[in-house]
Image (cartoon, rainbow, N blue to C red):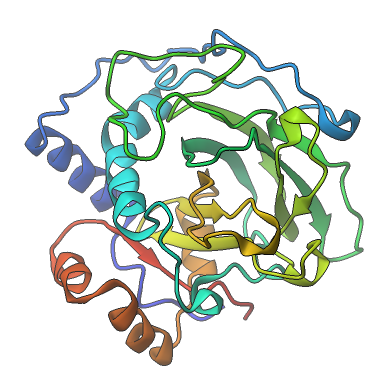
Amino acid sequence: MKTSPLISHSPASYSRGLFLRAIALGLGTVSLTAAQAQTEASFQDAARPFGLEVAGPVMAAGSDEASASFQTTDLPVLLNFVNQNLSEATALQDISAVSLDPAALTLGQDSSVRVYFLSEGAGYLNTLGYTTESVANGTTSDPLLIFPDASSDNVYYSDPTSSDITRNDSVPITPGDFVDLGTIAAGNFLDFFLIANGAYGGSDVYTADAASNPDSLQHLVAFALEGSPYLLIGFEDLYGGGDLDFNDLVIAIDIGAANVARLANPEPSFWIMMAALVGIGFWQLRRQPKAVPVPVRITDS
């Protein structure tokens, strides 16, 4: 992989910048001990579309040191970007320029992978899952569910720092809830999929490979957070593309900063297109000395 000009901050400077920004935003800080353990979310949804098993329990937002930091620093930044660029019922233009190459999300280094729920703007009770495939021998893992029902009372326009958190059979998760997928070895390709209305009997499955989707259309877009360990993926859940706003389910995936840097490889023509897509205001934001989410094309070396 070529080194991407997109990645300009070390993980350490990224963390410091987010810490300072959290204070500036009045979000405060969280006092934690290194031994703080994860806590399972108070409600675990029982939906198992296609009889698939879960990768693990959904953990409560902010229940360990990493997720507490994510909750107070990364999550507000990511949701602000989602609200500005994946607006409800507003079609995302030039999808191919920001869409996830289904053959590209291959880890260059071993990584502990964590998936955070960010937001959803769907009428469906959607299900998120994933598989892995070894690039070396083509072996594919069994598909596993991450969020059996990715429905939330705190949708994309909500305040994620609100103390009014609801988890029940209708809205099982809240922004910042997460699932650990364990350590995934270098050379494995991550393939995330969405089962549209899967928690209510739906059977349409959408992946990053448009050709394999029921309508042969793109249903995923990908972004990277500059200098961070996160990829952001947004899904469109309607057959035929719906409103193409790609905010029916939005997740952040921690695959490590080195893997994100390896995958983020935008071309010069891409940046010209993005100037027209998101407007000059976004580019002014990007020039400021802080980490902001930047759409990128994910490509192979």
